Image (cartoon, rainbow over all chains, first blue to last red; front, side, top):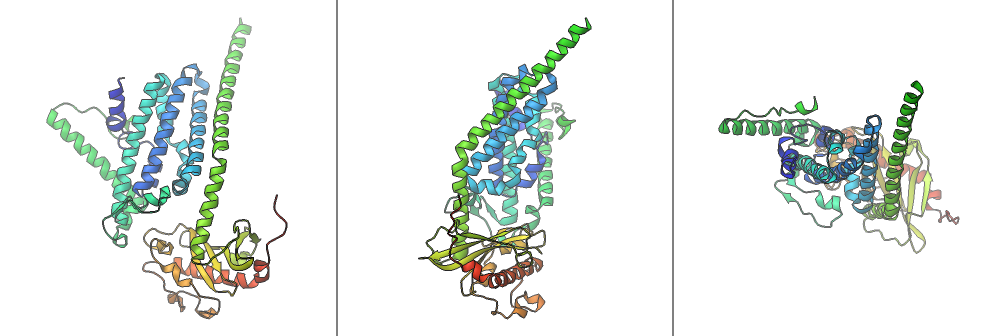
Length: 226
Length: 218
């Protein structure tokens, strides 16, 4: 695969959040604001790049029986390292992400990329795939987080300064948070908005397929998992 | 022939085990290294975080001791809402106690216990109350947080006799404290816990205001 195809795959055609629907639990739970979405997205991206590269290095030496066990070990070590680093240097973000930071280990996106791509590729392409997939996931987290924060709290990025320990707010306040749509911050709102986002993507794809009059490739959401 | 096949599968298993062990050791090494590199910063961050909480709940109260080291443990499940030992930190200025910061839990939150820090002056007046952890509904119950509303500030200056014990309740229950729109259970739990914390302070007053323990922990 060419680097360009890998990037397009992660960001668009096989986007983990919108097409593969991998890692939905953290995606829905943490996307309550732009800040926390960005934080978890970056942490996941970092782990994914490192785990894909590590898997590509050791993958070819591994007999089938222990492959998954080794991948889990690698991912768990990397996630623990990232968690410790955040606790030491970005304590506000570490506290806000709480349990979802160590739970990156259980994000099926990581094992899916390790097993499905990285173990059969050279390290640099595997790392690029980790970056592309991580960025695709980050993009959905940030979009969902911004929309939910805007609808629910009336601001965008309103908690970034407290996550990073900065003294002054950096976000934009659009309207008074007391008039926010509560549903958007609650779990049902996450599902509804993700559904709308999926519908938007499908609509866009169908429209493009219609204008180019090419049969669209079968990328129904969730199909990649089956 | 069978012997050779056995030998080969044994060798395969041994190779797999060695590889797995090697990766485990490498992963362990990575975590150990990062742990070593971050240990001091994590401790410093936790220290700073706790100190910032003290500063907030103590408002303008000045103190010059190392509060984190000047701590006693209280066990009073009835009044502190938890069976675990609760911490009580003492703030002192020139050696004299100026405040006690008590950890308390309001067990009756809408979705689980609400954790509080309650700062009390030696005369039994409240200096401040802060919520340190809760699972209340965003937009309704979270008005107990300072960045959502200033509701929690109304405890300042209150004491066990002010208002009288029968009115240490939310208005809906015939007390003096406002509930907030859409949520009664949350403020009810907090008001109850604060009143209990004050009672706990009275009950353990001598111990809480005692001079710091002379035994320095190792």
